[in-house]
Length: 199
Image 1: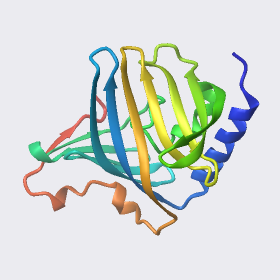
Image 2: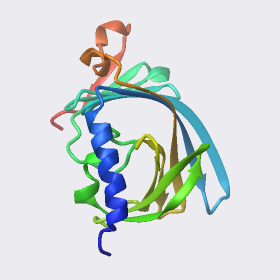
Image 3: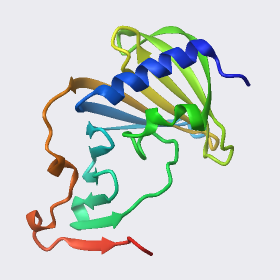
């Protein structure tokens, strides 16, 4: 499959727009659809991004990433796991801060059509992973035609399970301190720290 220039132009504008932002804050809805079982579950959360840093808050779990170290805090267990992730999985939820930087190297892409999504007109683009060992066959991105920002991102799973992230209430370019992306152990009483770095 050759790269589709129409899709490339949409993705380039999207990458430039997200890359130039001081910060991005958004509410999101995560929908997990099982095509085999015919089930659909949804949850909601908040995402804060600043360059390569992000904080993801969803269903009692908060993920902090400062560009190098990741802290995953599970409130019910009062436990935080510390890692230094080295690989990118090409999955928006695994690393939303770098997903739009990797489209050229990690994906083939194709423009599908202009289509309404979440009440706005979007460019629909399909991305196909070059690494065929990924658990998904393609990622579908809907990009707002007016803002060049993502409205919705879907991962189409080879196992019949699809993950869709709908972004809502975007707030751009707020001043955000770097400390927002670091888990401060001292702020949580008796938190159990599981440090997996270097293992």
